[in-house]
Image (tube, rainbow, N blue to C red):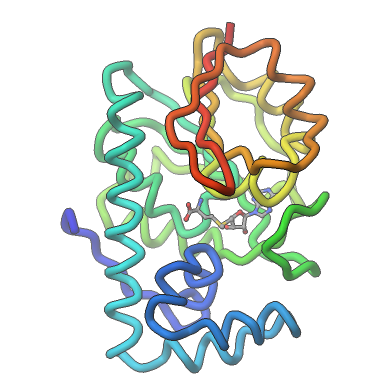
Length: 235
Ligand SMILES: C[S@@+](CC[C@H](N)C(=O)[O-])C[C@H]1O[C@@H](n2cnc3c(N)ncnc32)[C@H](O)[C@@H]1O
């Protein structure tokens, strides 16, 4: 781990577990996850993650998983300067912290935080399980300048369309819900030649991406059974 400090409350760890279920399941937390699917209640997740002997290896596993993912992405984007990045569904922002350390870019972070829905499939509206204040505290504690951070919860305030060089959505838009909700934002905010990076779930209809795709030159950089990670350069 590249010197990342993380000291999350049980409620924040429950959010992180929903954001990163592989680490949860590998430590035996599958039952607590099922309990959330069935009820939307995080109590079982919180009590599973409460012991330090679980919380620490869980957090470490998540950080290591995200470090590996950022290393893969970095091979494709690190050669071009990114001065402003927005991220749709960043969760607790570990991925964005590592990109910040590589690019020193301004971060615009868009997450709905909470929702009535609680599912992990592909639905018109995604499920929210994050906290923007917790994510901000995590970024600042790890050296991101507060002037470089802006959050938006689009369920409670309007998105701003300030230009960015890259829009990222990691395991969120296109994976849990269609691109449709963000088509206008992407069209307004992404600079020409800027890149959209997202995980496109296989086998689901996405009218939003169908509308945007002709305006991008797209490459697949990860091909897994469930999704493709796409880098899409705006023409
Ligand atoms: C599976 S987590 C991924 C978190 C993080 N990007 C990562 O790679 O660890 C999905 C995130 O998307 C957020 N989310 C769900 N629906 C959303 C929406 N419509 N707009 C923005 N964020 C959304 C959730 O709150 C959650 O933080």
